[in-house]
Image (cartoon, rainbow, N blue to C red; front, side, top):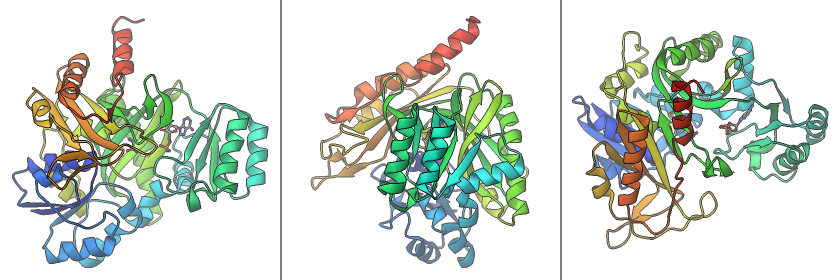
Length: 432
Ligand code: AMP
Ligand code: GLY
């Protein structure tokens, strides 16, 4: 098969490496890709959200399957344009991608389908939003209704913080159009996990679960980021519990989307909170997580390509996915300054040394080649070092040994990826 992978992050490098293992793969193109995906196939200079150019390329190159990584092209109608051009695409229509593109849409689907989620209200009027948080008190969560690339959520511990978020989003336009309406919701307490499934409109096939580490600082302090590391599987969320969570939080959504005439076909990413009264949905995304994918995909033992082709064809029915029972720990190396303006341009060395270690993979994101061909840092999240081992503690040790092998003066990373999961696992074992 000839595959066009869309995106340029660590998730896409991990997807490219996974697709590359398929005996069914004849050619792999990545648009726009990064220096990591260039090692596995051909990079194509088309922006990930340039739907018309992607579809024109797919037709010209007789692509059998388009595999979208990020959400932007899906929200912009990539799957619809592929369908119109007769090209198979393993992602949802723009109508179904609203599950990620609009928080209030996702919430309305949850309510119609009886899916447990935080109670919420949507506001287009800043004054009413201010009144609401004053009445409700803190903690409370303020979210921009539109897509804000992970920057649109404020978990406010005080009413003043919530009001400042409303002022910034609705009155000062800090997030542009995304923040002209906000969703304000109840604050959920518990452990947060990311649950993933392939969906073909009818069937949800469990991929697995991972735990992200969203804050820049150790012990989950400091600014929110795209994700600084991941652990898979979460120590306290086994496959039986993951299946139950799909029954509760994903399969009813598929039925509701069908009822609305906009079936969901693609990867569903259910961000959920394991609350004392059971799992509750925080949000849906319509794609794999980054860095969760980098921790999940190296544990996959099945051939991914026929499963994605079956998904695109609406025939996921009998497909199965096999994962190793091992643990994976993914540590993100970011450019100093991230999530603000990152330092760029410094040379990166040692990737081969890290990858020579048993069970260690290095995925590239915002890397580039300078004029001399040297690999350099070129953005926020730059590398993900992943290790797979029989137990979480060993995977952690191996991942950090991999990090130590990388020489890149601008690198910042968290030293505590997986620590919370490890403590939880130990506590469960000793019934603390
Ligand atoms: P999002 O941008 O929607 O992924 O949200 C960012 C983060 O905010 C989530 O990963 C959660 O950690 C947190 N969050 C969002 N909604 C809630 C909620 N209702 N209660 C507690 N935390 C939340
Ligand atoms: N790591 C969270 C995300 O991909 O949205």
